[in-house]
Length: 265
Image (cartoon, rainbow, N blue to C red; front, side, top):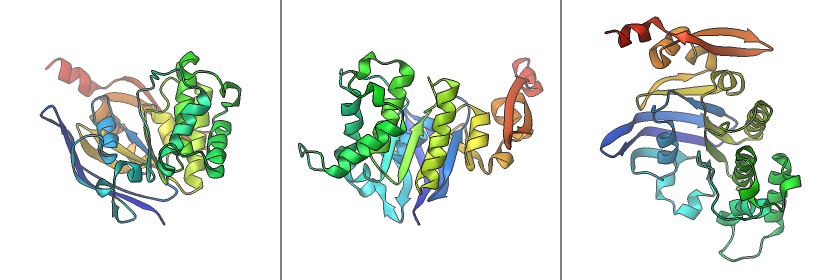
């Protein structure tokens, strides 16, 4: 059984401690939502897990220290969907998705049957067949997001880290993506995705990690993390918390009294 273990992870950017001693252990088949206000350290946490920013602590997959691997080896374990979705080159959708296979074969090698199957499966899964030969630069922001998700799927890694994957998607594709992440988890992958929509996080993730000022404020089942007290302490909002259609509804409705008191001294 695959287990991702993150121990005491810290990262400092421009002299400021952005992630401070965060630990998390998740197993095969899990979908963890990474939540918290703007500036809580979510993006830096994901990038530190990937070795993209200087960090201390340990990130292990099945006991293997990922920091000790070469970049290409690490990319066979971890796939990353970044928040930035700009594409500079007018490559076709199919060519961009094919980039996800680069960690699996030698440079300049012709794609194998497995490569072609993984690319086709990712394009189909993200409903991109109609765009296959179009330049990515000609697509809308939401369509480009789906292309980059397909690239990450084609990578076929046991772990997928996604930074605000719902941004720029309409409600239909947001829900479709959350369904997809649940399906990938059910197939045995480990998914960690940062997001701001608390209702979608509560309804589709089996666990949540709430960051506040770079630290882990709460971690566990959605109903244990998303409480009125936590939302007031971390987000300084009052929220409606209820249930409908078999899941949680978490809807901020006003600034909290605590926020008003802070603003007025």
